[in-house]
Length: 439
Image (cartoon, rainbow, N blue to C red; front, top):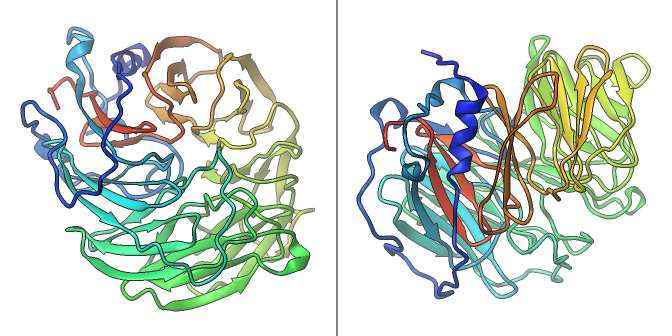
């Protein structure tokens, strides 16, 4: 049953966050209990929850409403359930399947996949990805880091990708299943596009360099074996976006975004359906789908609302509206079908009417952001790159509900499952109870 609560009640979940910076061992471990304290029970109704990819099951950044029922009479300090340090840094977002949480960490020498038990907060296993290269090593920008891309997970395997070109599939106990390597040496910042699963296919979008060098492409591999099922060349320049899959007009469309095109493909075959020319500049914000529109935004371009469907170049026929403004160069848009929010790296939060693109409000939050906004019931959750945690009312008037300091940099997006919010900081994963049940 869906439970609706006030946004101020939702906001109190974030207010409890208080982490201390920690220096932890960088030695790989196969299984380690890295926390102390009582074992925490996952409520039975949440035990089968999943958050299997970047920004949730559909890539929207919207949490299911039935996870949120936090009473105001529960002391805030009781809602921080646990925090687990990680040996290596990263900016990828947590994945959740069953009672396990998966993230990656890396530096210039090592790449690791971590599995954390959601009940005990133990780091159950660590898998070290082979350091070998089949070609030239890519350049890695300091802001990107060595573990920026969020993987994906299904009932059988967890999949992780690194800007070094390593793509690995493991089973849920940390055993190696298969591994691939892709040449990403033309990536000027380091690959950061996250992975996507669709009907047994693992989709890897690899956009590199300028369109005229012919290096941008997308690969679909068999999730069970790692073998290529289809591969298509893309007429776009380098990007760091993540695709989404939508159901519309009786067909499944795989939506991608990179200068200059938003392109929709048949997810099963890689055949192109349609394209819209609307992207400028280096592209990192990923597309979202809500209320019958695909929304894309990028600095130096526009926030554009596209009706999916059609065939070929539909730039002149399927763009409902487009507007300029303080648009993002990292954070992805957010929409509930009635409003659209965009968040610039410099801290400008803009809200637009989803019907016609009219500006509803624009507010300078005076915080820098790399984490995309999330929507939880009646509140937006925003995490700053210095550890600021803000909640904003998800209505037509700007209202800051809370602001607190997390205690370490946050570059990733939170995951929502088990009646909790799982947050990956630069060096920790931690859990916040938002049900009032104690976790």
